[in-house]
Image (cartoon, rainbow, N blue to C red; front, side, top):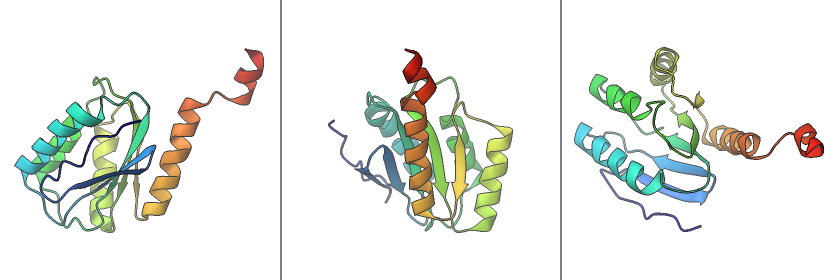
Amino acid sequence: MEFPSDPLIGGTRISFERWPAVVMTTPPEVTDDELERFFEWWQRDVETLAEPFILVNDARRTKNLTASQRKIISGWMDPSRDSPLLGTALVFESKLLRGLLTAMFWINRPSYPVKVFNDLSQAIAWSQATVAEHTSPPAERRQAS
């Protein structure tokens, strides 16, 4: 599979090295404009991939998300969008940000699972298990067919 190149927008980096986990590493601060431009690139170049995947957002260096940025993120996770994205893992060291995001996704639930972690390896393990769960039929279904 051919992957899109990293857009290098506002210090945000994308890696496909742990496919089906697409690891996004965000900088300490990002502007609303950079976030909007990143999501435009994402919809155009990543959501057009044919195979299912999980976004792992490594935001351990991120210091703050403004209310407008939380709204941008929440709007981007609109459940009506057609996408091979099966879920999102968010990695934050800040207990406050983890709590805010967990609450945000209780209120505005996307159509796929969103989990908040404080450890990148746990997020990647969850993403790989989630993709495997959605792309491999259970043993009972395989035997019945």
